[in-house]
Length: 281
Image 1: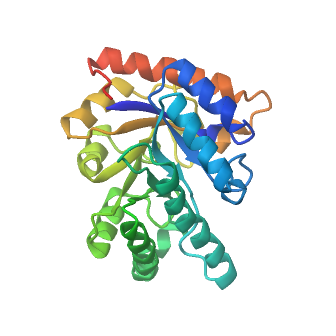
Image 2: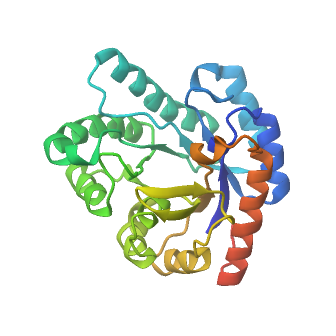
């Protein structure tokens, strides 16, 4: 396994600064965020900027395991849906443009919707996901769908059912265990269910139980990363463990995006050592 950091926690940080800081800390890779309000929002990434970012990644020897393109797949308004699919399919094109060697980054997204809509909208969701997955497959890019608290897919069972319906090797999971931890699901249970079908991961820290919970920076809470890493290894996961800092944390008046990346690295790199797991490249 390897250790990554998502620029989700760095919406206003120039990509040059982000890449330099993430590399200086010792991370092995970076997830690039392309949604609105970010310095790397998709519409700002013309051919010259894509070439420049690819060169920066190569210069700093940072892998690009994923692109965060989170956009709802359940918008009913045609214009809103078209805009979301533009971003998601654009994420696929960006994955091809920025690929470091033969490894193409996954494109991550949450599904949108609400948990109670699953029975009535899962086939509609599968159709939308299938269109995106077909586009990804044509370009050799995997779509990684993230189960998320409050979304239509909020349990391992739902995402596994969707994988079965769509039935494509280019649809995998972006496994963010925090969304299961805050509802009291044991680490072993969720890892056993999802590790084998995950293309990428997110880890945060967290406190409390939904609905009374708080997302935190890795190291601020009590989540057992050593146990988690050992479980992921035992269940065959061999990709990136990527730290993500939530918007909840970013809303703090004193939020420092560079300090958050530093604390995350200190916490997670130590967890790798304590788990006896060697990061490899």
